[in-house]
Structure formats: structure tokens, C-alpha cells
Picture 1 (spheres, rainbow, N blue to C red):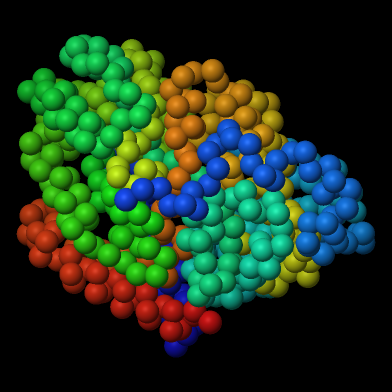
Picture 2 (cartoon, rainbow, N blue to C red):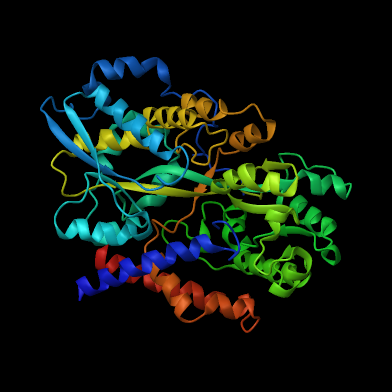
Length: 482
């Protein structure tokens, strides 16, 4: 029974990731701050570079076991290599690690990115999972007993304390840590400066609020001319963390899901703005009439003033849509809610439970993802590839790492975006128990379709969603939590 449940879980994981990333079908992809809020990007941290040389001279001072001096081989797998600069980044990271540890050879394992989970299943079936690999779903990796418990490595490595605490806390399952964040993709607003100028709308401050965003969106929309205040109305995704301290999507707070009044209000805003044409969500015939293509994506035609998306879409706007529209785009931080929190999608990686070299695998994971060396070598690869803007952001507060990010551009808007990333709440889909199963249940019952067709009201279904999500979470923990 357990094996059948796990196989189903793997299938559901893929549909869940697709569901979480879709948002809009036409898209290219689609209280106060807590006292534990991490150091601001760019501020000096206690674990800064003065002590790096000392730690390299004597690894035992870090509290970790010493690295082996034997000749060994480690294997590694990550995705995203089809994107510009990613192969160069990977090669720089691996070469730097092998240069630092010449007795360790690193072999990269090719896994089909389009069928990542299936590829991991195949590798696991032959006992050949990589020593270090990325996962779409940490909970599935734990359920399948693929992931090593790295709690002690995290606790004993001072470098790990620079990682955003919220990302680590979100990934703990029954108090244990089986994964580490690798990169993050913050939510941001693609602000069409040309659109603002055409309608004589002053630009907002980088320190703007959600209330200001709402006022501007309603004021600047002109649907009769096929111009809209905003697009991609995933307000129930990102408003939760900005209004409810410590919560991510679906109100996940690390232990429970909450479809509360914040979620109800956010979903109602989605419906109201679609009805009132504040948000672009137009039928195919209108797109054909105004844009000449019933499958057109209006933001790519400069028809939206403010588009919500993730940093991975920056390249499309920089490389394609700016020239296509003749519009100038600015990249704004998320408008702030009462909590001051910012939502980001976070990718996670694990160390194989089957690895014969856990200490060395931990170091390789650090050098290829969250560690300072991983970030610096990633951005050296980006420079070699000629990138002018980056989408993958560091998951730590290390000053050198953020200086490398800022070194790509002197644009004020990019620097404002980076400087606001101080209080991150990670998208919970990879790490929240029951998330995938709840997504599948919603899809099977067409919950969000019924909401969008107004067959269900958010207030009428919220209690049932809270109950069902937590039931599926409890079921997952009963089966796999230990």
C-alpha cells in the first residue's frame, strides 16, 4: 500500500508544480517584521569574509568533521541548464570545488528536466541516485527515503547561518531538515513606465504599499482601449504572506493550513478585478480584435501597466518584449503589506540518503547552491555567458554574494528590488506536507474552476478547504513523518 501511495505522490507532485506555476495560461511561465528577520542584503553579517581564510585553513574549526583526503567521486544533478548562462554557472561551480578539493572528482548526472521526477525514480530503482541533487518536492523525496537528514550539518556549519532562516524553517519536517535551499525567484512587479507616461500617472515609490498598488491599478485601467491596470491576478498566492506574518500560500505556517479571511478577500479581489476589467483576463475574441491574435499575451504587447511575475521572466522582457513593444519596463519590489514579508519561489536540493560520503556531499551542495562560493561562481558563469540581468537570487544574506548580484547592473530599479529582499517567505509547495495531495484533490473536484466561474464563493468553501488541506497534511505525516 505504501509503495502505491508513493507512486501516486510522485505523479501528483508534477501536476502540483505545474498548477503552482501556471497562474495565467498565456504567460511565458507563469503585524511587524519578526525579530528573526535575516540581515538585509548588503549589510555586514557576523559570518562575513574576515574569518573565511581561517575556516579554510582548519576545517575542524567549523564544527564539521574534516573532509576526506582519499580519492573519491561525487555525483551531482540540477535542472535549468537550457537557460542562458546556467551551463557556464554549473561548470564554474564544479571546477571551483574540485580545485579546492583536488582529491574529489565530481561527475554531473544528466536528468531530463521535463521528466525530472520520473528520472529520479529510474535512478533510485537502480541504486544510482546522485550524491547531491535538486528536487521539485522535498516531501516526496522524504516519503521515498531518498533524502539524508542534514540537521546536524546545518547546525554545525557556521556558513549555513547566513541562509534565510525562513527558508530553513519552512523545510523542516517534524523538526528535521532533509534539504537546503539552492536558489530563489522573488515575486516582483514589471512596471510599464511608458504606459504610466502615456496616461500621466506618476511613478510610485519603491517603498510602495499594497493599498497604493490597488489605487493605481484601478485608476490607470482603460479597458475600452484594451489597456489594463494589472495582470496575473494570483492575489491569493502572494497577499497571504504580506498580510499574515509567517504564512505562505494557502496560509501554511509550518504546521497548519489556513484559508482565512485574508484568503477570502484576496480571491474576491481577483474575481472583482476580472469582472471590472482592472485586471487583464480577456476572451480570445477580444485579443483577436485588438491584437490580431486570439492567443496573444497582453503584457507582451505593452497592454498592462503592472504585471506580477517571478524573476525568471525578466529575461523575456529584456530580450524580447522591450523591443517588441517599444516600451520601457522597470522592475519594482512587491508592494508591501503589513508584515513587510516578500514571497519567493525557492528551489531545494537534497543529499542522497544512500551517499557513502555525506560530509563531502554537504560541502559539494554548499559550493553548488547556497554557499558564498556557489553564488560567486554562479555569477562568474553568468558573466562569461554575457548575461546582463539575473533571475536566480542568493538564498543567503552574505554580503559578497549580494555584491556579486548588484555588480551586474547599476540600474536603480534592480538595486531597489534587491535591497527589499530582507524578509523572505518561501513558496511552500516543495516542503509543506500534503500540499501536492491537496492540489490534486482541488483539481479533481475543479475547486478553482468553480470559484472562477462563480459557482462557488470563496467564503462558502474556505472552511472546507482548511479542513481538507489539514486532513491531507495529517495523513502524510502519519505515513511518512517519522
